[in-house]
Length: 184
Image (cartoon, rainbow, N blue to C red; front, side):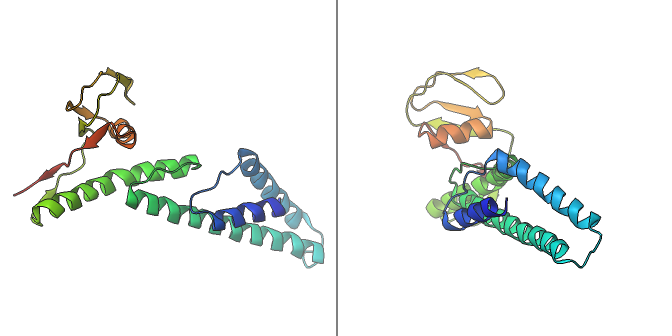
């Protein structure tokens, strides 16, 4: 377990994107940590070399996993700031990434508005549950994340879509998400 954790940690350190973390390793890590804790607690001599080795291994594993997750967090934040998609995320990381996307997308839209208007008095509209998009090329019918069939869409069509569907279509080059700004 130690060697595999070290290899994953080194891979994460050397990769610009989150690496694939095997489900088997996740389960094994938890089981191994529980075994180390139990063996350290049940040891007759708490000061023995064996007990100190168990405790030391647990401490090193904990530090490696913490550093691995912090590195992944930095990659998630950087990708969210840039509006890049990521793969190989753990479920909790994917949820974090999605939660970061809405306010950051709104702020990037504000930057685009200011870039063209040079109007810093514009106020961000609170993010709604829907995004307005314009189709920049024809798109076939889709089923959005709400399970609703929509389309097909000709070039120039405007639609109000849920954020995950709008972002997927944007990544595919089908739509441009329109800014949601208001001026006073």
